[in-house]
Length: 105
Image 1 (tube, one colour):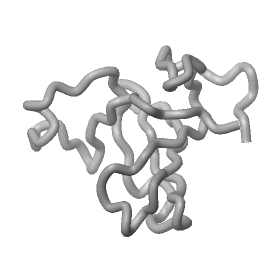
Image 2 (cartoon, rainbow, N blue to C red):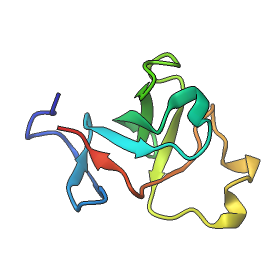
Image 3 (cartoon, one colour):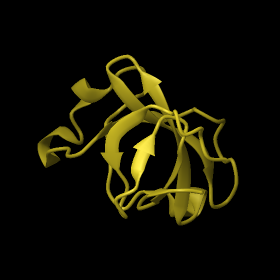
Image 4 (cartoon, rainbow, N blue to C red):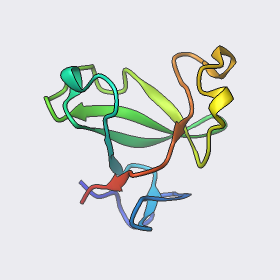
């Protein structure tokens, strides 16, 4: 389901240059836990204090987690040294790098 044209723009673009807006569903390739999720997972874009988050919606193998169970703040770039830095954790939210994501129609 596509959000209304008035949905807030996050100023992020997907892999094809499509603007990502609040309410959009984006699909990301799964690189770990493929046995659990399959090869992709969908996330719904939500506004949160301090930015925008991608909240889990479903996986290729179905809704293997409750909707919104995991989420991460959207960011253009995460330095390698920060990916495992537990200081980035905030109520189970960690930054998610926007790459190879695709807005779903």
